[in-house]
Length: 105
Image 1 (cartoon, rainbow, N blue to C red):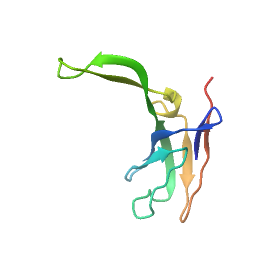
Image 2 (cartoon, rainbow, N blue to C red):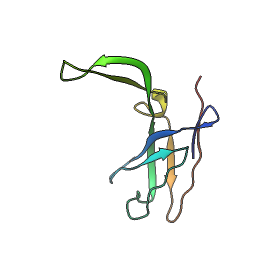
Image 3 (cartoon, rainbow, N blue to C red):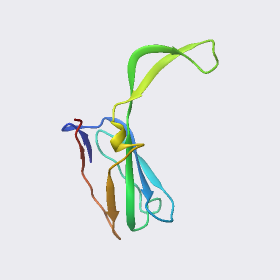
């Protein structure tokens, strides 16, 4: 489960990045819930966790083609929980359940 200021993160992505060698694993977040199937999941070990959730700003910006306009999006999750993550978790063999209760300052 992933919450931000006590509310479930409606849509987003969670990524587990190994502290050592190994492959990253991730999943979509929907209504605060995520699941990584065992066959796609990370191996037991220590991981950094990055959480992202892009939301529309209500503004339009010039698209990369330089001709059309598109919706602007921003990450509703603070950098300390994604690209500058402070989140760490140890995964064990078998099922793992974690609550990521994120609070903004």
